[in-house]
Image 1 (cartoon, one colour):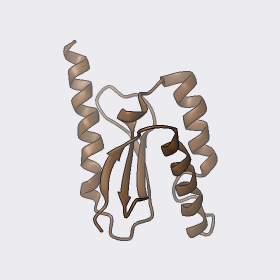
Image 2: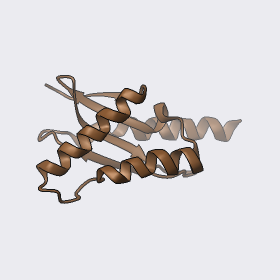
Image 3: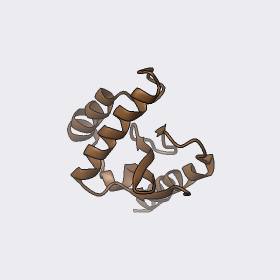
Length: 116
């Protein structure tokens, strides 16, 4: 099944992302090819809550297939002209084209903020 993109919804997504990152770590023999679970917690509870106060619906994107998360991305920091996302993938047939949407949303938002 082709992965579908959606945005972060609520605290349930937080726990699903934690489980997803744990599974990715185990599948990679605990090599940190993507964020370790502790980095997600640090980003969520310190970087986000104490520093940037991101609207999670705008900066956390999930790709799901058959009701399971197969990839997620988060904006790491604020940027004026570009976004920096980190991506965590388990799907074998995940197309890089799927990354366009979060970046396009971010750039559109930055243009709107610049106008105001």
